[in-house]
Image 1 (tube, chains in turn orange, red):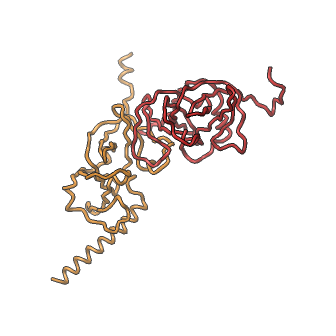
Image 2: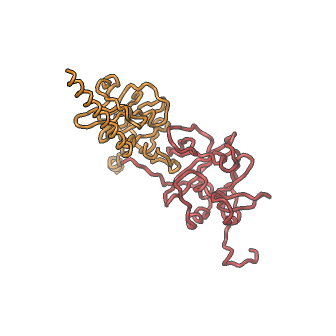
Image 3: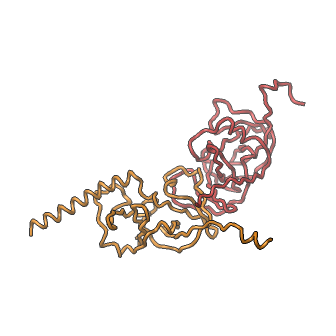
Length: 177
Length: 177
């Protein structure tokens, strides 16, 4: 029967995504990868400077429970000219808090095409692939691709130096009292 | 009647090729590698670190990387783009599409190809003679950006067998879980 065959037709696989802007460029990220969205103003008081960071795109960190997350400037990560960021994505299962310009919308993608083999640079770590929405191609970012293991190691050293400095400042303050 | 040559040392090399024009010169691409010739359409650009890739085009739901090979072959980029030649390459068994801007009409011909010699550039798969011209047959997987590997002899032979200008290819990697 025709009705039965229609009801048995497989549903297309879909994924909820957030479209966000960085320096005029639109990217997509799986909404399941974003644990929390906060405004930059909201976290300003909680961020810690990392003056010893050798990673240009990371200048601050933030404590979330017992974990330290590194605040990655998405524009610098992608090699775009940075603009004042307004939002931060806390990315699930990563140590990245991502500075972005803004959110465009939430939507659904039904197709994710792997990156062409013509792309052979760092972008293979940056993106899960490409999707087409409203006749526009949008790169879908890889949440784990914002900080490499090597970068995390360098940032941990910078964090340790910042923590040591902060403890030293507190201790010397206590001595003065 | 075939010329009186040794049938063992001179295998049948009659194949189909698409002649493409890149500026002042014409080149040949094995016809089985050519999927379609389309009018230039919107190029989508996003951050990446593959300098030979200009962006991607969207064609029938497929996102295809664009690479201007005229720069490598003629020493300058094309000033006029009449079409995008959509072609396929194979890397370790994986099919990958590429869009190549061409500056003039394309022509489908059937002729004999002379295999490239050891002194030819790696991007030359062979030579053919047509209309009083000696034309390079291009190894697209060498000439266009992709994983660093040379196609095997079997692969390169399989590229030039078969015929038909319009080749529909169903290999399209979807990566949505």
